[in-house]
Image (cartoon, rainbow, N blue to C red; front, side, top):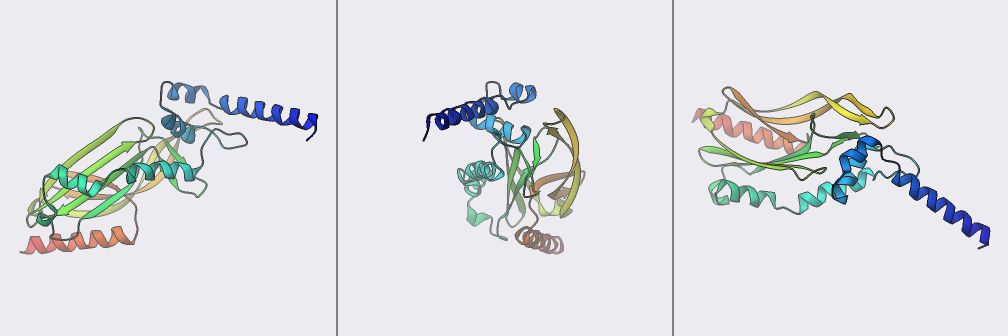
Length: 228
């Protein structure tokens, strides 16, 4: 390799490094200030543009970060511990779980190259069924910050009016690196709901064969309990 080739490689590497370091907009620089490296990567994923020398990770890498959190926790067992029951006590039907990204004003959102919307918030829900009650455990976490929420609820079958799934369209603020501001985008998302008089509890979900079958089994059990 000649001397000029070596110089050229060094120059390209230097300017590539400078470009990556300087790729952050003022908005991103403010949001990543004082954050751990993983959270900085998440914020850059949602707020930086694609392109040569981009400091934004790929969709697959972000999916891997989400899976790492999901694989680090046994949510089924955690749910049983939180509601304080043994699995033998909640065998009326098979436990049901839902999970998916959350969309709303407090989450980042981005449309991936696979035409799938992702967000910085994710929610996992587990439902268990005893002879008289339905127990819900829900865990919500953010990848751009340390925030997480856990909640448990329990309902008597006689108080539940419906189990349902819906596809809703929400206006979500999405940061546009070219415009250097947030713009509103319409995003469709699926949700499961437990309806009781005067209230609904929502769970993020991915609509697929498993969730459709699980909801049908829950509806059948509710009808059985209402008619018994």
